Amino acid sequence: MKLDDVKKLHQKKYRQSLGHFLVEGEHLVLELEKAVTNNSHWKQAQLFVTSAYESWHSPWTKQVISDRQMAQLADTKTPQGILAVVPLPTDTRSHSVEGEKVVYLHEVQDPGNLGTILRTLAWFGGMRCLLSPGSVDPYNPKVVRSSMGAIFHVPIETDVSLNTLAGRYPDIACLDIGGDALTQPDFRNHDCYLFGNEARGVPTEALARLNAHRYTIPGAAAIESLNLASAVNMAVYELNRG
Figure 1 (tube, rainbow, N blue to C red):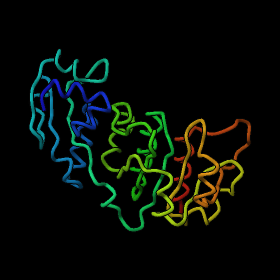
Figure 2: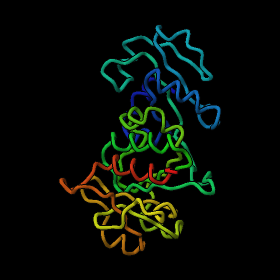
Figure 3: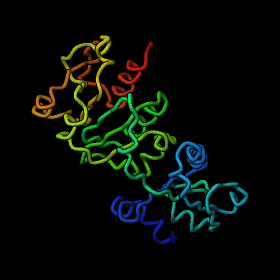
């Protein structure tokens, strides 16, 4: 890919039209290299490095560029001198695995929240992430960085409408105030776990149509709600406990 096109990948419309996203920094590139062994899709990446990384051994085509050019390509203020241009995953739904648990995020907006959630799903494994229309782009550079490489290990589906969930998952759970305690054994028996927008949650009428079983994380009620990533982290831990 030409350098002028690489610069455009900071914007979602160009990531979609060019079919690639940016992976910046030594740690993320190393995680991407690890992922190649489990998923041949990641073999199609292209590497851009400054002279500091010229001797870097890589499974991909490597292009050495100047520090000035790297500064123009990178999303960070002080780039490390190494980044990869990676093809967007395609048709992730067809690679679903029997028995995997599904986390559905409705209109998640914060890149840091999504990146943290992906780290949790990757840590426990056997998890799929579905994102509703209107959610932050998972291939946004801020999400990619905050995922710390988890984005290469979690199947992600984007633009999945709430209305399609019932057709795919007959038994849906959601986190909501006033539900049953998620420490109940039944919490682990659902197919899909639904979490709402950071501020607005999930529309009440949508939950009714899905016949979602409501659960809550018991607390002291000193504050109104938990951070979305914290709530997902606790729920996923509970799914994998014992």
